[in-house]
Length: 79
Image 1 (cartoon, rainbow, N blue to C red):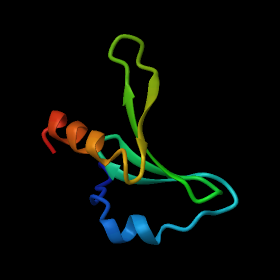
Image 2: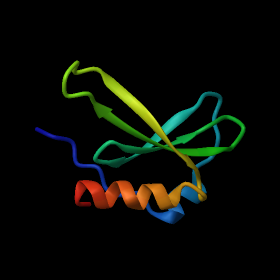
Image 3: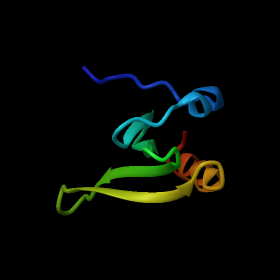
Image 4: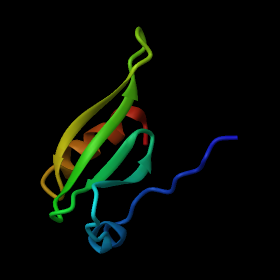
């Protein structure tokens, strides 16, 4: 059974606090927000390469500046 992930809200993103290690908040469909220990937040996209099957991560930019790329990504997958 698949795990259902609800889209992140602006409030959840702003309330995310840095920890001892970097961690991810998942938005579904491979999109995630990385929270670094220094408080910086970065959008990432994780996907599997069709030919090799290996997982690859692409950085889409810092929050909130990279939000434009997140919208374009969501539109490309139909989200």
